Length: 314
Image (tube, rainbow, N blue to C red):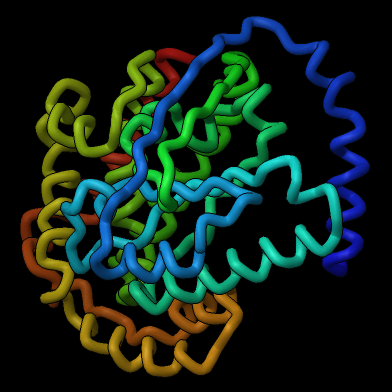
């Protein structure tokens, strides 16, 4: 679809929102206050410059860059909320898309293994907010890019959120198992390894969410012994160790080469495709600490997490 066709399709959907909203039940109303960043160092100086206090969308950063705990493993995690005015004219829509595309390229140059783009919502989404995509707990740890603090009002519909959440949960488990097979077949590159480590780490807060407790990833990992047995904990401990030692991982230096290539590209999806397909493969026996975990341990971890989910929702 062309930009214009996408714009027109969105506007057609907007016309149905009031009718759709009236059918929703079991909503929880929330008001969140998100403080401005105030950070002027790299990469926040770039984010602020590209955003330039844009009046058509809110721009938030969360995760390790927000709390300044980033490592070589870290990529950029954001939340974009498009205001209703974005869709009032095609010109507004195009201008915002151009800014967001530029930010996407910036993210990929910071981390050539960045495996996702923006997390985009609209003000319309906030009236029927789906926590399966981004839990409310994440908003509470965000910082706002721009000159002002931001107030958000959300209306969360619990049933829809849980249905979508369980689908995402299953996808991450299946992806983790697939990446495990690649790792132990010596067909894994740095992009795939990061995908595997991220899946293991993300499943911990999601498992707490299954149990009815929505907390941040960092807190969930600190409390992982509450949900994991000893065998599953070994896999998480190994993943956490690799995160810390990421810049010592075999083939990590190749990221510098790919970053130089990416400077000449504008399409984030193309950059990600190149990383996914052409990063050099890693021999599993060259990974630190791998002698302490086996393929069976990884598969056990994913099956163990899946059993917890099934205990609550089957």
